[in-house]
Image (cartoon, rainbow, N blue to C red; front, side, top):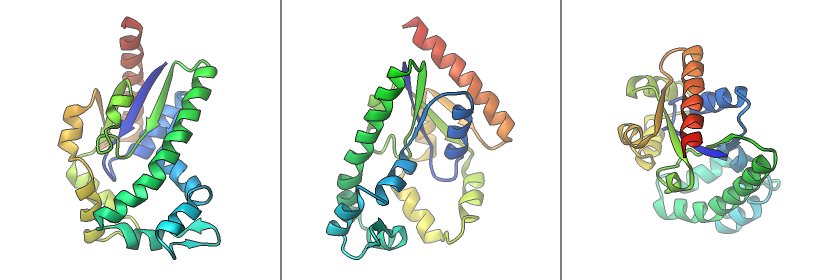
Length: 198
């Protein structure tokens, strides 16, 4: 089974690309979705203990938590020390299930793949990119997004050009979804061929 790490900076089209892999019947583990589940369950009491007042009725209040950790590297580290091990546990269970089901390939959708050194835990890295102008247009169109918040998020992320340089395959999402779909199909063909040659 080939484990594909899918990543890309904010606004580059990673979520859409993950859906395109899923359309090709490739199991996808979405780290963001896992965090959402954890914030509504297992992680909430741990986060409340570390950041009092950031939960409401047993679930993390993402806005309150964001206000506490964004722009504070030490607070972010504390949060990551709580959340990352729980995400890895969920990911390991996902990989075990996929192997048991005989999957040929799986995708781990990991937003901070390079930033957390996860590229060494996957067989291939696929980076999605759309160029800086398109990225800015998409991100600034999000409700509540500010220049300050965008800058803070970018500061935490490995620059797009570096991600592209370190990728096994780059998927350009600046055109249509159909165009990206063709690139995903080509990427899968190439990666499965590579795996077969090993």
